[in-house]
Length: 168
Ligand code: RP5
Image (cartoon, helix red, strand yellow):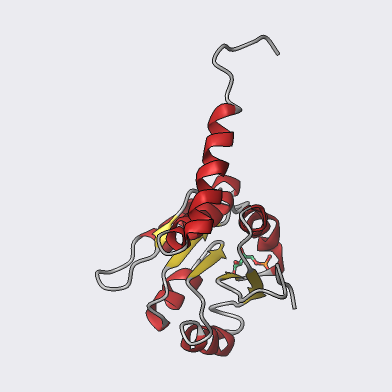
């Protein structure tokens, strides 16, 4: 089974509808690794493995997960269905698709009815990375160590941005 720091209590679940989503979803995992947050990754498809989705959602809170990052493309029902099964915050990542460039994924994830929210990120790579940062921010509210590492990460990013543009 794919996971980050195997000795630590997993705090973030990264789920996706297909193996083909992993290149986007692993961008979230890389951020979590940088911030020292233990994660696990699972393929959990709303359409192809609905029973897996149901049991993952039913067990999420009891297993100690503090956030679930859910990525899917096309008819992307996974994040919303997961939000219907658990109160653990669900962060949705719209996968960039070939047919409709991910607008289909975005619209499938973002328009949740009142009562079952999904925190929806940008389409594609930026959304994958930002999902990791969003999960870290949720954990940082109750973990000073993560808060300190996230603050340092953000400061390093700001410091890396040049003030003056140069020719390519
Ligand atoms: C969705 O269908 C997955 O999340 C994926 O983005 C998309 C295509 O899946 P594959 O046909 O590549 O397995 O369920």
